[in-house]
Length: 344
Ligand code: DAH
Image (cartoon, rainbow, N blue to C red; front, side, top):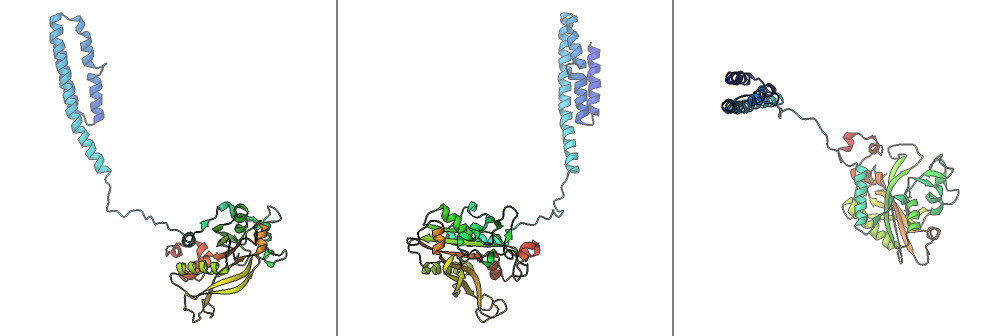
């Protein structure tokens, strides 16, 4: 027994020394020290020995097993270090290599303009209309009839408006003004809202016109609202948006849903009013349409025009962006050429 134990100690020690990996070491451990290992089979046979031998052989078996455990631990640490070093070497990252190019995303210039304008009007007490009041697929009834368009108005013509196959009178809205109707049907005055969104027109595309563009609609209805309120709010808007107290001009105009109606011009930002190509020599740039809400429109939504009055306005987001940044082709907004987009 004693010789057998010494042989085990010698063989196991050799095998531990020769282990090349943690896996080899595990195999040695299994072979000699596990429950089914060689040392255990000797310990199991102790019961057949005399008491005297049991003591001696038992003690020796324990000594051998402790010694082997120690050797395995020491060798294990050594092998672990070697394996870790090798792993670190093979997985080394060269931090001086150029990295993947990840261009930074940006907010689209039209969205930037919308955000900016929304913020300006929020500063003057307007809130953004719930989007369910301004669907892009709209009825002729809301887009035109409720806004006091006469039945044969040319804007209703197939030339200007996209008709759908959903139903005869379902269209892609040609303006955001219908949102006024839905808002007033859902809220009694005071009303003070703006509503940005997409509109569609059946026109040939050019540097100045696109089939799809964006408008921001505004509506304020309350008691004792006058044209002076309209002028005050819109002048303030122009001042903040264009960055200085730029001269404005309220030019008499016509919209079916406002009376009186006015188009608002700002002094040309390119030539300062002297006259240039951008302003076609007039010195003025048209920036929005506006007016006092027509009494018929108020009646259509059940608001008494004897008690309440209000004003409305609508502006083109592309046009305002083009004027501010001197962009000469509306199609640039829709081509998604990053050389254009990253300038904003
Ligand atoms: N909806 C008009 C258009 O698309 C713009 C407009 C003019 C809106 C006057 C208004 C307004 O609210 O009062 O040309």
